Length: 292
Image (cartoon, rainbow, N blue to C red; front, side, top):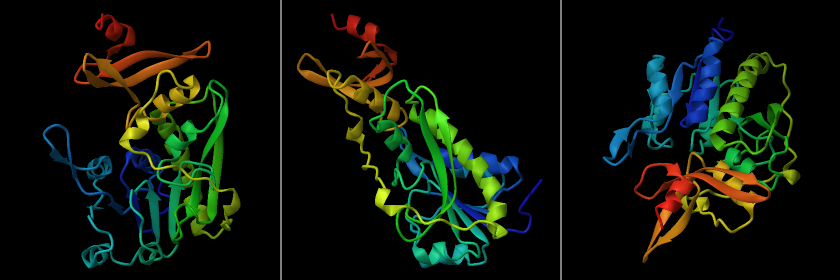
């Protein structure tokens, strides 16, 4: 049953976790009236113009979309209009100007996949996995719903929920699915309470905030002779992008070898499966046999 029948909600999102949250909203009949996502980008070897996953999802559910290249433009402002009750932001990918986030009657809520104020920034899932935590032990992770202000992940907390993850660390794709689902369920529970004025936002403890370093293509580089647990965490954290890799010297040439599967055994990093540059995925043992 639709628990928000009279609300005009606009959803801002671009990446996979946005879809996971939208799926939880759809289960409760809480679909937004509009979805704002990033414009199509060239992808693949043929550089074919490809819409975001969120755009594809929106079309499937017959939800209107906007794909602005520049959200500060007058053209976008005219299309967006100002008659909104609530904005929801889940991994949109751009900082939304204050003039826009203040537009809705009930403000702009953000689902952030960390226990704020810890792990502020664009890649909290990868950041959590990269943290120096014991491999193979249980660990807490969680999500926060906050009221967005003009600073990054700085606004007051509206709701927060944590869960215990067994056998840390999971792959980033697994943790994204887990926290996206948790965040979506928490969001559909929180929205009616927020609208009814039953929630008082709580200021974050800014003195205990931590931040995630920017992830680049080179962030995935590993040294197979370096600290095994640290390298293993990188392999797990970068299973989606940029992918963990090492450089292998073949004759006079160095090739990039992506590591897709690995494990820790007796304190050592054991590489299981790889994708050598220009080749198919194979076992690491198979790759090494081919170098003899």
